[in-house]
Length: 188
Image 1 (tube, helix red, strand yellow):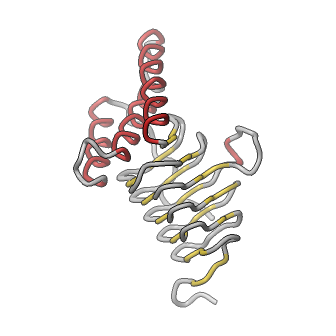
Image 2 (cartoon, rainbow, N blue to C red):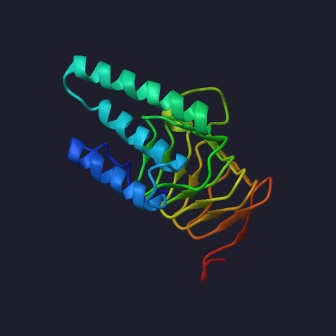
């Protein structure tokens, strides 16, 4: 299942990073004190730091961002790496026990709730084994999405669902193990 948005590129300018952070700020209730906004701001800055051309500046910026990443992870329980590809306006609804794999892709306008894991089936850290989440996907509390699966645009992953297979666009996946319980109109 192909992603409609492709991999969201890291912004090539600091102004681009600020634009992304402003969008995340709005998506997270226009509050700088929300843990979800803070996690996204650190992720955006970390992704940008990786693009800096001056090696000395890049090392310093990456070190600062790694420290901020650890603070967000340890204080709020939200682990989102600088290498994770995240689209615009990601909304992290609640803090606590959120882990998004470093090579996962999350589309635009997604909602992620507490206790969500988006990761690989094995301990490998390769890019091919991480999930791809489409645009406007809602992920319920406690949901687990594992392996090289694709979650289609506008899908809904229910609370405590365990997803190890692709979910088509517009579908709802509920319960452990996740089952397709509804399909978009017109699909068999």
